[in-house]
Length: 282
Figure 1: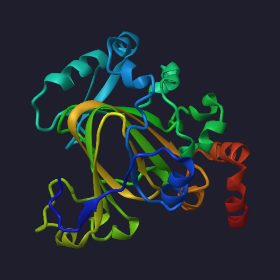
Figure 2: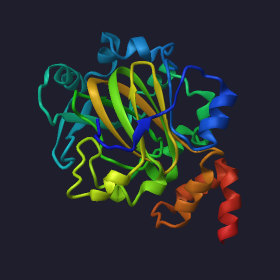
Figure 3: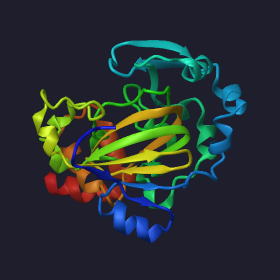
Figure 4: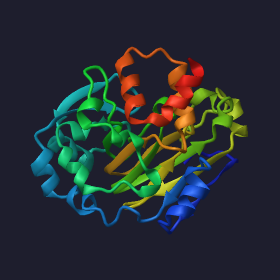
């Protein structure tokens, strides 16, 4: 855990009440942990079992060293699942951003996107989200050994995200976008803070939580976050666009150079809520 004085526990809710979560967290852009919200999903029993290995075990995946993303190697999913149970490496390989629904769309039937995380990207046909150069599905499975994890980051183009732990345990730290300077634009490691190199970390105000099997964590648009896998396990994530963050996504899309101009037209066709932002800018 990051040893900083200004960290406090993140809100934990024991309810899946739509209006409460929408009004107090999603629309207010506040992180929250929802206890046990994924425990009734088929994935909760199927993915940690032989059924998952039998379906996907032969799939070749690319795993990466946590501290050095340039160190990668291919392996079968089955062999990686064996690896995470036995490795004692303090910097283990991590399977990140596995775009499972490209090859195994049936796995999407094993979980339910909570209504409070409605995803307007799901209006777009699956085939139109698959591009040669980029994957716009924005749904991934993460599988990690103990001690693996992510560096500090913000999610892609202002989207928000939910993450459900199917097995294992994760530790999260969150920082409001207003803390960007104090966390050095994400360069610092908040699980091993170096106050000599990054003295402003002492002023950074953040949130932390422990996510256990069945828990869902909500990451609002533009919030900085970092994850440590306290125990080996499997999780699933979807990034989403809806009324809570479309203004952030549109602002970023309007201010970056996008090579895939055709995808902007796709967004405007299927998510007409974008038109107001793009019309104003034209």
